[in-house]
Length: 78
Image 1 (cartoon, rainbow, N blue to C red):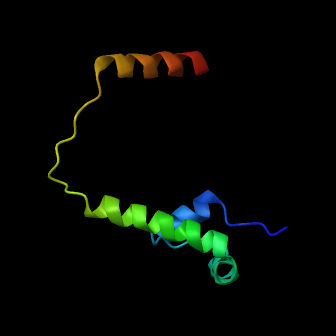
Image 2 (image 1 turned 60 degrees about the horizontal axis):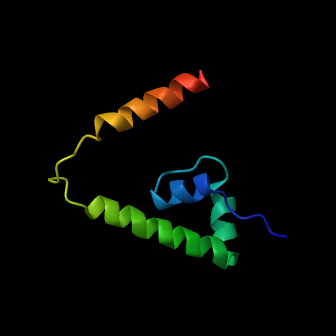
């Protein structure tokens, strides 16, 4: 059974970031693995869509109850 590239490796490649750990191995794997190429292509489309989104759109803060729920979850974890 062949081991595929993990999500972090694929995300770094989709973002066109240099991956210091064995970039040659990743490229070689992509040449022979249709599954990983498909995953990488999908991630690249997402990256392109996000980069093309209008930065002029205003950011809307979440409702206060969302922040309360986050704070409660964090306090339970600590």
